Length: 443
Image 1: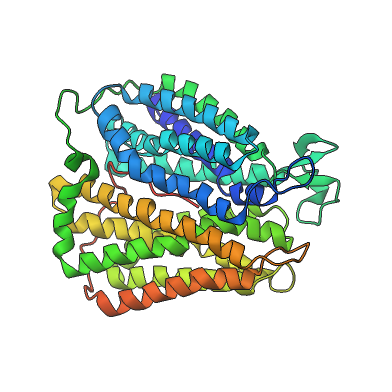
Image 2 (image 1 turned 180 degrees about the horizontal axis):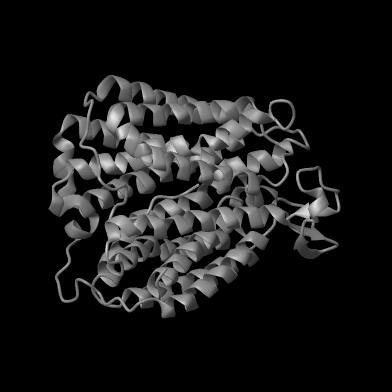
């Protein structure tokens, strides 16, 4: 591996390590944080509101990328500044004990962090000799970083107030009560902030990448990719776009509630167990080209939506006892859920777009799905969680009812798509990477 590829790989690893260190456990922390006198600091609806900050940033991020990264400053310097501010705001969030201040700090963090995803992709592409062939081998380090973060957070405990790794003899067993998981604490936020600070300084050692569009005029139409609206006139594309926005509503339930759910019902080290989903994602991504050749895009997308229904149904009826296997099934279905709908959908949209509009189309799709769709899901998940709260001291929510809501929503989208989407085949993609555009959330 060359020096350039090594530096790009480390950047990807750190980028997703710091994100994975806190994002999955945020709902657990917000659900259990209490004041000195035992009063809960954050409400159930606030959990959804906090996750909604990433969606707000996904809506605004194209402005930041279009106006700054592409036209005025070198990419590595943009990354350094954004990560530096992001680390500071994330650390301040870990110290905040009021909903208003916590929300503002997390929102400020995501406004800095979300643009770095596409800037990092762009910087990587520009510094590879053969980006179409080499990008995937660099980007996979991001998934590995997310997995390592989950394993690390799941294995760290507090013992007599001291942060330490869980002793090896307790792995896979019920840990003693005096070894407290850090997942319900602010430690994941602090670990993420420190790792992002490291990433900020590391960005100064990335290959110098000057702005590619310096001196060019920029319009709101360019930044939002509004020229991409033209391809929605095709009925199959319109159905896919509508389905993508709607499926992002139940999608947010997994990001926001899977970790709190497993912690609440008594499954040990859920952050570590959730990394099985990222392993599944890598496996099914490798299978995706085969399915494009054999069954076509319609069935790939249908199977992806079926997997969402199956995942949430498995969560609804799983428990920490004899039915724990259902929860593992739900986690392992992540590869099908994500790759067979979101990755396949990006490839499908890329195949429908004219060459000069491909970046605009991907940006517009991200704006609608990871922006508007996931914001709606964030608002809904917090209210659903509050609606199904119970007085039980141990398990505070009726999780069967909670998970049947996104299962029902996904089933409704599945029926709509199955009836309305008529295109059987799409061009077989040569590559499963997209140059430019925003990066989807890995979870």
